[in-house]
Length: 483
Ligand SMILES: [Zn+2]
Image 1 (cartoon, helix red, strand yellow):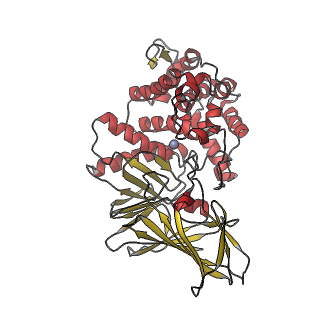
Image 2 (tube, helix red, strand yellow; image 1 turned 120 degrees about the vertical axis):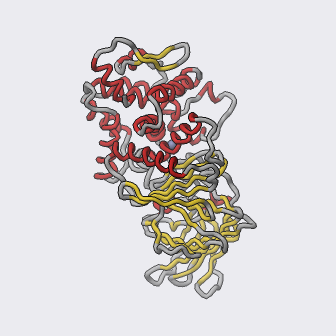
Image 3 (spheres, protein in one colour; image 1 turned 120 degrees about the horizontal axis):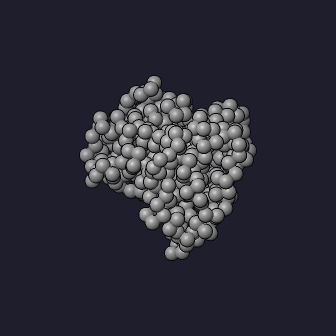
């Protein structure tokens, strides 16, 4: 299957043409599907709602019979081994998981635009993007098939999971390419207003260096930072990230710059945690329906913890910034009644109900793994360091999961395998931590934090340092705070 995507900047449409060629003389019906959700965006988006003008023709242009058989399924009845499909996709959404086309750019999350054949997702695919007359760039983590900067740029994906994990930005946006640690990088910025190129690029490098130093492997050849204009949200991918910004790179304060770089660190670290180190339910993907997992508190919550850790290791925040960063999550969780009603584990399952559910009673009955997950990240890091006299840490759990499941077994981890990996690193099971994940019982902060020479001020919910600590407490505190 080969695709060609053209842009209608006036009507806000993407025009898609797919050429299907089978090796043999084939006359069996073909079921074409379009995903209804995007990995990382745990919501049924129903992409086929944007599709219109579906046509199937043979290679001479004669119409073929087809029928809609599911909300996201089209059955085509070919008369020979090759045929063509054409359709249009309306593209006017401001979301990291949906398409947007205007006079200047086209942001294309491919899973909302390109169809796959049922049962054939593991096949390679080529996609050509046709640039409108005055447009120059196609930015994506996908592998380019020719290095030309021509009007038609061709890319290859090894399978549909890779294709759907690779959003594309077309237009006259700001592009900067650079090499670092033997890999190729592209900054693709819709609104570079106020950008201080070298400061931003060097700070991004510091974040990447602290992540790759921890994981000791870089699993891509090329990585693309797609930073969109004013809007909300970011979505992680293995070879790229797509993030909305404030629409400008002028920051009001150091704190707002730090918050933005935290966001970049978060999406970047996801290439390890959730894309490679992943709950077993998250890939290969079923794009037809919700995929439930109890482990998003690790995939998302630990990524929040590590955004704070990596920023500190990169020298882009202070240890007091890091303590304040975690304190904010403790305050959020402990001041919400929801923490007495929903466990961290359950918040993972229920994300499909609550992704954009901000009902009035929300804080009374629910919690978010984005808030409680990083707290467990800190407590588990401390617990493993306590159990091993600071010789092992949560970093070792992440590396073990990466090397064993992603590199060796080439699959995700189950819930039991996650806890067993923690046990293997710590030398004993993390029973208390698992209890805090699986239940709504109150966390004994004083007990858990003291091993790192820390305490919680119950009035302000701020983490504070304890005076007069033992050498081990001090060593654990220094290791976590990178002091
Ligand atoms: Zn995330």
